[in-house]
Length: 83
Image 1 (cartoon, rainbow, N blue to C red):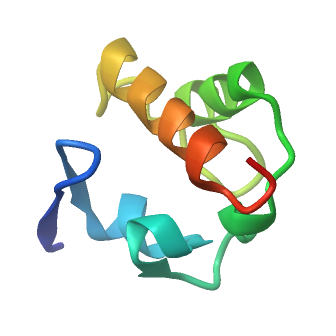
Image 2: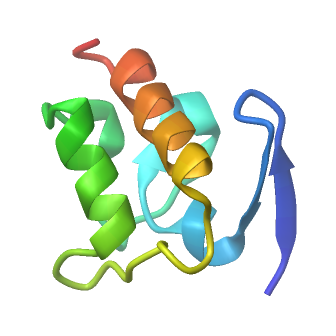
């Protein structure tokens, strides 16, 4: 599994974290999960999903710190097309 540093987030994301969703701001083009460009989820719900997982998405609670999860949620909420 490859690692890639995401400069705008300041995090190292592995292929699983970076490759499942399409999200233009992150440069990801995955087709496994939903497009984050079109997400309308509130930031708190994004935190909950990344922390606990949902459907086919695993929990990242043991792989990312609470601060990292918060940064990802903020990034998605701020950079998605809907704002």
